[in-house]
Image 1 (tube, rainbow, N blue to C red):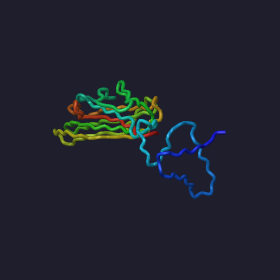
Image 2 (spheres, rainbow, N blue to C red; image 1 turned 90 degrees about the vertical axis):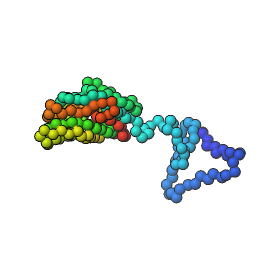
Image 3 (tube, rainbow, N blue to C red; image 1 turned 180 degrees about the horizontal axis):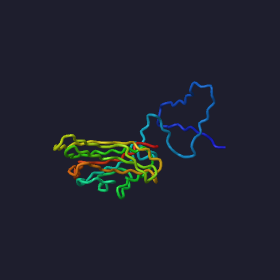
Image 4 (cartoon, helix red, strand yellow; image 1 turned 30 degrees about the vertical axis):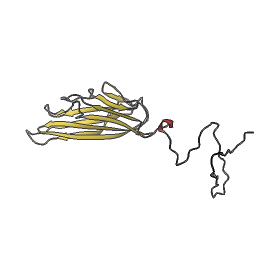
Length: 200
């Protein structure tokens, strides 16, 4: 039969008391079959010792390196600027997620619309890998004949990714005026971010 031994410390003078709660129910505390240190609510745990999720574990940041001047579905010119974690897989304009979970997709677009034009930079997702639907839109509308406007708009969508093989995302750009564009450059005039917030 295994035994439980409580061993004091010869260098200390304090007394440690194990106190029972005010309960009328019998309880059994089962010790793990391994060596280690008992932690309390006052213990500091190094993040390197935690094997589960700890805060945000995935973030991926893209930008458009050059202006987009035509209606495009999907946008295929996103360039990764920085990432944290595994990162998204990006191929032919389609983004694949590295893990399941709740993912926040955010796009910030700097547009130029000319003369009663409409610009739409959309976030689209699919749960079957092929049937994409628009979930959020960074929109610019100009209702001044002969006018021109440069505006930054944004869109975001929280996507519950339950299957990385079928849940996909993409962006599309639509314009009604042939002179309208969405700006791209190296300093992030138009950006796209994927952030995993937690488990599904």
